[in-house]
Amino acid sequence: MSFVPAAAAVSPADVRLHLIARRELALLDVREEDPYAQAHPLFAANLPLSRLELEVLDRVSRRDTAIVLYDNGEGLAERAAATLADLGYTNVRLLAGGLEGWRAAGYEVFRDVNVPSKAFGELVETEAHTPSLSAPQVKGLLDEQADVVVLDSRRFEEYRTMSIPTGTSVPGAELVLRARTLAPDPNTTIIVNCAGRTRSLIGAQSLRNAGVPNPVYALRNGTIGWTLAGFTLEHGQERRFGTVDGPAQEAARTAARTVAYRAGVRRLPYAQLEALEEPGRTLYRLDVRTPEEYQAGHLPGFRSAPGGQLVQETDHSAPVRGARIVLFDSLSVRADMSASWLAQMGWEVLVLDDVPTSALTATGPWRPSLPPVPAVEAIPPAHLARLLAEGGVTLLDVGPSPAYRKGRVPGARFVIRARLASDLPAAVREGIIVVTSADGTAARFAAADIQALTGRPTLVLEGGTTGWSAAGLQLETGEGAYLSAPDDVYRRPYEGTDNAVEAMQAYLDWEYGLVGQLRRDGTHGFFVIPPSREAHDTPPSLSPHLAQEGHGH
Image 1 (cartoon, rainbow, N blue to C red):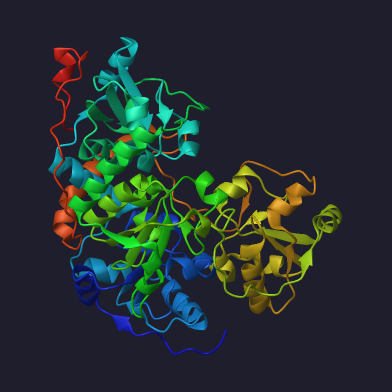
Image 2 (image 1 turned 30 degrees about the horizontal axis):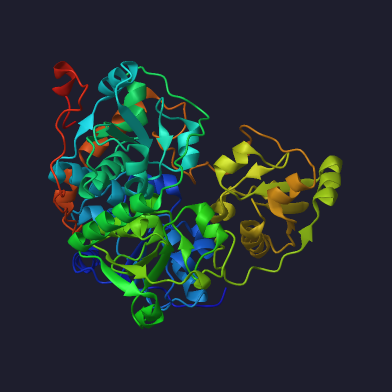
């Protein structure tokens, strides 16, 4: 690492004013995800020091972006500043006092991840009075075989893990495009669910904003509420949306464009896309279609960001607050609806128009931009297997801890890259050291760190853990040997099937308090457009007793 001067400090007050003014700023928390999720400013994005080189070039693309780094006294921010300087970033500062400096200034801190989107969802419910039904109400309707359809607005992978009985997977940005096809009778009640609250509320309100004629409700508290009510979820379901005919597409396109205009979204002819790039402004180019459509053909330079998840994860997809966002969708509907929500969240967002099919020349999954990857000697899987059988090899896994538990090279020890200096025991620093990660890329950066730390050559597993498996070698699963505490990933209380009741209820209670936190924080700049119509107050077959609970928490 080359010598770089220490980064200057900036006060919490200056950072807050920058956010209020919506001047471009990347406020980055360089701790691991779990410590970040315990407490952070509203618009802080998590970019751990361990993954900095792997993510920063795409998430903060301009080298002169105003960047403010912080930690909680661990010394990570200073190291991250040096790494960014080595990568060519020229406008990096440290938050004076770190997280505690922010607290000491009297400013609000938030728990969990994707908080701007979740807080916005709660504000939408409060301002737009998004109607919802409780789990017992929905269960009653399903038991009565009432005229209802349940649309699950999460990613398909989440839906497949657990879902409401009869539910169909329709990820959030697809709802307005496909609801009229899935519920062609305007008397059919549509119920939108997610795991917790945000995507249920945003999904239901999307349909209301777009003037879908059906009664529309969010399932209050999603699959968490269903579980807390003692009801059984389905697992492994494959129900997905189908095709949409021309008239339904056109109706959805007209409705979505109207919503986008009402939110202040601008349109950008494809011929003017390159002119949108200008010095001093960050531009995120995002494709909000399904991953399958993206892989079949997309615009060069556009990242895959399915619209429902984009609105849910703005801090991940666009961590530079104040940046511009341009969205592409071949059918327009998904881009318009996604853009309408981003605009209400304070983003300058444009929808790309008139894109010729011939321009979709890139294929396959999105590949991250990387700096030069350290040149480290690689060992083939078969060779490593022989060495492991003989003993005397220390194998380190620097991939995510959930992937480590799901499947690792036998004998691998989990370690967090940013903690190698403290967590690598002296005994491990002797003999042969081999490092692995999912595809071996993160392992190369970690191996270079170990070489600098120990002064000894360090190898990487060729192809990473994926290469080991592809060679026909067995993986080990379950809990393993942890040199570092596995706090690189925050355990979300709304994912998976084995969450504690107390954790799920605490999560819901936290979400209910977000609107109050927004008010105290004062930096958000959110607004909520009124719905284009009044929602039906009572579904046709909902009994008066159940209908009394049809709104609110």
